[in-house]
Image 1 (cartoon, helix red, strand yellow):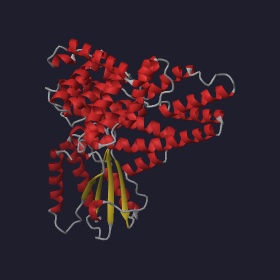
Image 2 (cartoon, rainbow, N blue to C red; image 1 turned 120 degrees about the vertical axis):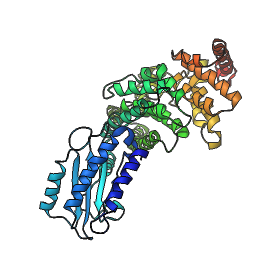
Image 3 (cartoon, helix red, strand yellow; image 1 turned 180 degrees about the horizontal axis):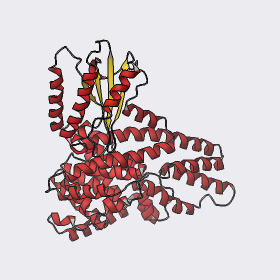
Image 4 (cartoon, rainbow, N blue to C red; image 1 turned 90 degrees about the vertical axis):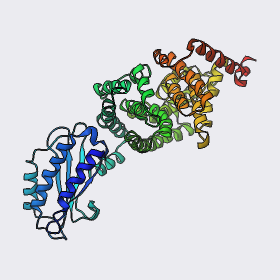
Length: 476
C-alpha cells in the first residue's frame, strides 16, 4: 500500500475503533490494487468516500448481534457509480439490505483514475474475509480467475490482450509519467504509451526497439527496476504476441525486483500464460498424435484451427509446416530432400518467436552456423550461478541471428551486472545493436570511438563464424 494512503487508511480505522464495544468495529480488506493507489485514486477524496459508506454501514448495522456477520463489497470504477453488494450470515432481511443499498448508492463516490478498486467492509467476521459458507459470494478476483481458467483458448487469448490493454499498461505508463523531470526518457515513454490505443493494431517494434526514447528510458531506470522492459512485454501481450513476450519475460524476471509493482504484474502474467500454454500445448499434441499416425490432413486441420484462435503460436506454425511437408511428400508432390517450402514457413514462425530454437534447413555455410547458434539457446540457464554469463551468451546469439532488439536488452543487463572488463565489451555490443536498429543517438551518452568498435565487432563475429566446425563442414 502506498505510504500516504496507508496513513490515511489507518487514521480512518482508528476513528472507528475508538467507539469501543458499543458498536461492531468494521474491518476493511483491500482485495487488489491498493499498491497502485498513488496513480489510481485521489487518495484524500477516496478515503472520504469510503468513510461515507462506513458511516452509513455503522448507522444501519449498529444494533446487530455479535453472531451476525456482514460483508459489504465495494468496487470503485473509473466511470459511473461504484458497485456495492451486501453478503450476510445469517441472511439479513431483504428490507434492511435494500434500505442500506438504496442509501449507499446515493452517496457521491470518487471515481478511480485508471482501473477498478475493490475492497471489502466487514462486521463480526474474523480477519475480515468471509468463508465459503456465505451464500452466493464471489469476490472480483475470484470471479476473474474462474472466468479465465474455464475460458476456451480463443477466449483466454482475448482476455489476456484485454487485461494488458485496459489494466496493466495504463498503470505502468502512469508510473512512468509521474517520475521526476530529470528522467525525461521514462516520462516521455510513459506519455507515449498512455496516448496510444492498444486495442488497435500497433507496431511495437517502432514504439520500442526503434525508438530512442525507449532506450533512454531503459538506461535511466535503476538496476532492478524493470518497469520499462516489463512495459514492452505487456505491449507485446496487447497485440497477441505471447510467444515473443515470453522470450523477454524469461530473462526480465531474473533481474526484476520481486517487490516492485511492475513485477507483481509480471508474476500474474506468468500464471496466466502458464494456463494458456497448457491448453495450447494439449491441442498441439492432438495434432502431433494424428501426424504420427500418418493422418497428415487431420493434423493440418487441427493446427489450422489452433492458429485461428491464436495466430502467433510458433510451435503450431512449425507443426503445420511439418505436416504439410509430409503430406506433399506422401502424395509425391515433393521430394524428401526438398525443403524449399521451409523458406516460406520460417518467416511466419520466426515472426511469432524470433528465437524459436528449431530450424530445418541450411543451404549454405552461414545458414548452417546460424542453425547451430539457434540450437545453442537450449544449453543456457541451467545453473543460477552462470545466469549473468549466460545472459551475455544469449545476447551474443541473438546478435548473430540479427535479433538486435532482444540482444540489446540482454547486453544492457550485462553492462549493469558484469565486471569492468566484461562491462565495456557488453556496452560496445549494446550500442552496436542499437546502431543496427537505427537508434544512433544513445551512444552520445558514452565516450569512445564507437565507429572503430563497431567495425571491430563485425570483424570478430566474422572470424568466429568461419572458425566454427559447422561452418567449415559446409565449406568442404
